[in-house]
Image (cartoon, rainbow, N blue to C red; front, top):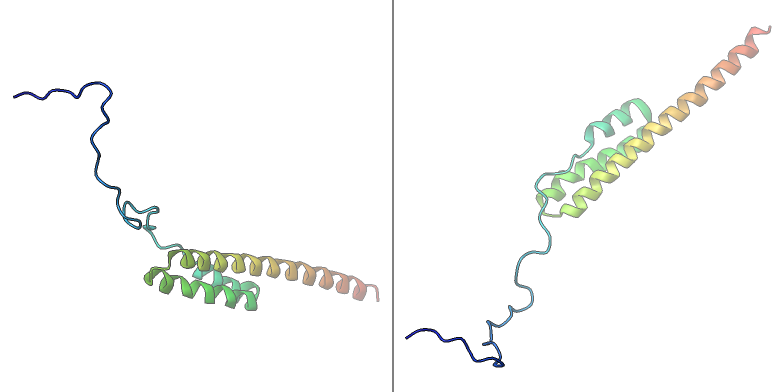
Length: 115
C-alpha cells in the first residue's frame, strides 16, 4: 500500500500541542567569564590619590567574586562597574587636588620671593 496525498481542500492533521509556559529554550545565556573586579585600581586609588573613594572602590571590588559565585551575574557586573567608577572618580579627585596644591604652592612661593 502506498501513501496517497490528501485530497485538495482538506485541513492538515493537527500537530503536537504547544509546550506549557515556562518551558523551552532559555531566553538569555549565562556569562562565561567573571567580570574584572578592578581591585588593583581601587587599591592604587586609595594609596596614591583619594583614600575615601579608593576605599569605596575596594569594597565594591570585594563584592564581585562572592556575587558571581552566588549566581548573581547582573549584580556582580554592577559591583565591578561601581568599583571602576569610584576608582576613576578618586583618580580624578587626586589629580584635581594635586593641581590646586601646585597652584597654591607656586603662588605662595612667588609671594615669598618678593621680600
